[in-house]
Length: 498
Ligand code: NAP
Image 1 (cartoon, rainbow, N blue to C red):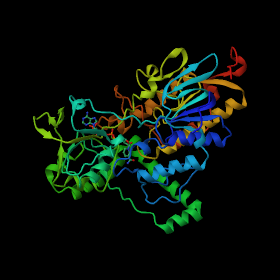
Image 2: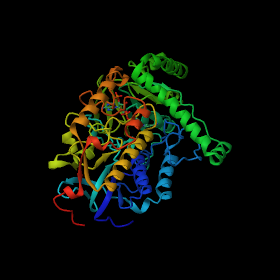
Image 3: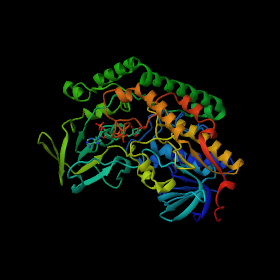
Image 4: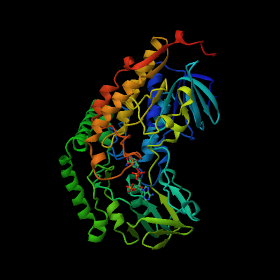
């Protein structure tokens, strides 16, 4: 690994999909003074960390990949985690990024030096000063453990789905799973056959649709290899199909009725026991929470060694879990599939903009960013997959790639015009925020009768983009300098020392 340089034009935090893609694209534009700071020992972000049994993507592979790097070799319509991780590693290598990636460099703090127009980025292994800082730390990168009394004193094995303990054998164990979101839905069917007893603690049931995964045969792969346009066509068809979901989520919820009927039929077909079926029937509008795609979750929950517990957990004792009805269940292992710190990202506490104000302070009343990317008072900072860029219905890679276009155009503008800093105008940011909030009002995510990780503690949806991906792409196609305060190098008090 190369030594961290003292200076760089661009520093990227994180080497998941959004960070890797940004770095590759900037390099293609001729930005070679670039560092990628990665706290872990490998690239891959959430696809490196979420290696739990059965981990896979519920967005079709052809769409869940970079537009500039199609992979004709996907083995299934919905890729498994190892294949996605291998794809990301391959992209990093193939596009010559690895010499710029600094593994094991956790960012402790990044502070804006206004006089020098530089970000001073302090990591666990040295400091780099960068003109532009790209935060691609990822919305699903910091596991959230539940606030359950006694959990920290549990004497058995405890881990989060996002940091699976592969060294621990669950065979014949009494296992508690807390949470029933997209992660639990994937690993529960995998661990059910080996566990002795499996208690699945469910607070809210998910809507579950059939997954309908299929292997992609050698012939089809050869077709994509030989005629890349065919794969592009398939990708476009999937993209358009997924865009249709938006109508149901944001325009007219009656469109979700058909999908709800399919989900109810799926449940009725797979869960014959009426009592269990009642427990698993959601009481909120479909789409309010992330829809789960699974063919094997319900059958696993019907197995005799599985119990779905709907009473709330009161406390954890050193060797058991106690629910509010007073029942105590002895367990050897607890797996928390309780999601991530999405609306209070830890990285925000370490990024200091003008006057030393942290991003977390700027977001005291909730995360906000202009086009999900820039924040007033934080010059030359670009957030990838920042506030309101999530896609509940489609590939988040599309949103990241739209932001890459915006970032690239901004960097191009800065390089061409000798610009030292760009800082989004507060009024532009406010207007943009108002537009997003207005669009959000109509959505199922706010009015669907549930609480989800899409909402922050004030009930505001600061995570999802409330419209078509196409609309976001349009907004980010060009860096709109007119909405920024631009400082040229000649306006700086003194050029920063090299
Ligand atoms: P999640 O969707 O946030 O689910 C967390 C689960 O934990 C929910 O069932 C939640 O219940 C429960 N929970 C949280 N705190 C609890 C507490 N104190 N007591 C009891 N239950 C508690 O997390 P996730 O399943 O890891 O998924 C996160 C996101 O990652 C997904 O929405 C998706 O965007 C992505 N993901 C995607 C895939 C895929 O592509 N297939 C797979 C995994 C994850 P409530 O619902 O009542 O809050």
